[in-house]
Length: 599
Image (cartoon, rainbow, N blue to C red; front, top):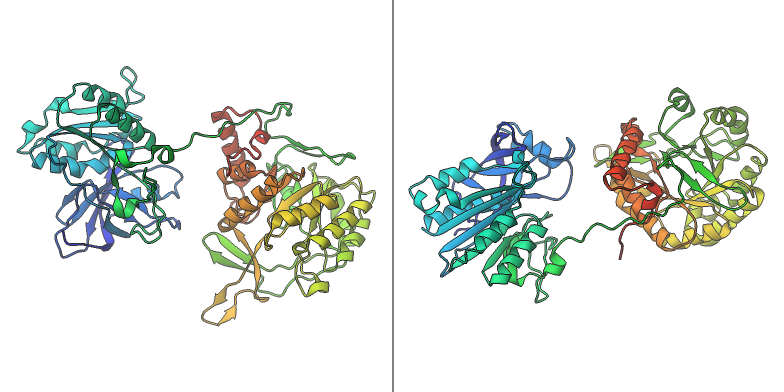
């Protein structure tokens, strides 16, 4: 077969497979002068439409001329790739690559084939069914679906069955199992077990579907020493063998690639213990929690408890006083204020902010404020009237400024003080205070001695070699909680003016793209077991992403950049987490803290 490589296609049609189906049939016209040559088992990789990186592989179910047929199950949010694929209009150009993988050749000496498809996996067997029929071999096609609305592709199967070789595929050899059927619930593997019990000689099984199903198929075949091949579905980055990201482990210790060496593998060669997904981690109910499943009490000595009805809030600088007044029902547990300094700061010159692509933004605001005296006289009382705990953030350009500012709050009704140690230290050439464990300890311990009864949290920078070492210094200095991460250092350049997009050049990079850095930093500090609660912040834009922070070890989370784009995000986080707790029978959100299974 001559090798073909495609780079784009045009949407020929896209519609539901049936009126009541949740599966879409996407037909793509390949711009290629040659006859399309796709072997059973080969697939194409569609480029993502939502800004993601990973390509989405789809089995080619049918070919007519220059048109290939794919099946799409639209799941997730409107912004998910599958839903965006399902909305493609005829004539739209879409990037794709393919065909990928090795085609499957029929096995010598095998006269009877049983094809078993689970869910969308059935699409990967359609071309193979056609080839088996053309070779005048006997075939049995078994499908399994969760619901009747997920059944798809019967038109394609019927066309193959009702061709000139219809006698090779009588009605009794085409079976469908529906897991939630009201009277006859069944799995594809249930039907397969019945078929194998007939002990028909010269039989082989080829399956495609979820990994647990494939393992069960292998076990059924292994018990009878029947040849068994499985088609593996895997997310891919390059889809051509360069990145080696889609490797699976075999019994002999090798790691063949799904995109290049597969997707169909001899099931007897796979290391099934490594191949099957690990079960979900069991959450241990700790008990002794408040009746409100979201309520959190960070208990510290000397009356420095922090009691919150919601364990999330807007990050400093994202919610102003006027907006807070106008939105008293905002579902946040506290207000975390933008930094105030000993003396007034004008902030940095404009431009101070710019888009950085992929849900990211750069800012170099510079913490403009009127100074701590003005804040206490004009703003502190107003924030206190809003009936939520208030965390006041202190900033400084010299180490001593933190202590001098903290002295202003002695005997004032403030819930907590946050030390922003990411500010440029003028005494050390502009490096932030938070990069030096010794300075962190000195600042924190000094403020602690001044405010012995105020909850003290410390904002840590990710721009260090070992964030746990900085966290240890803060905890040793007397921090009651730790907030991480602050923004990463970033820069963008306008290619037309050849100037920096921010007046100061570098800025703080924030947004969804930094979430992996934030989760890793939180978990690093959590595993250090410092006995200090963690406020996780960085890149959160959904309830699911907030849950990742809790599982990594955060007790509280904050939302920054995403709050600018979506002022309803806290309602969405609240709803998503409430649904998650109910679905997983978890009594209290705090039972999730640090519950992820980690190496």
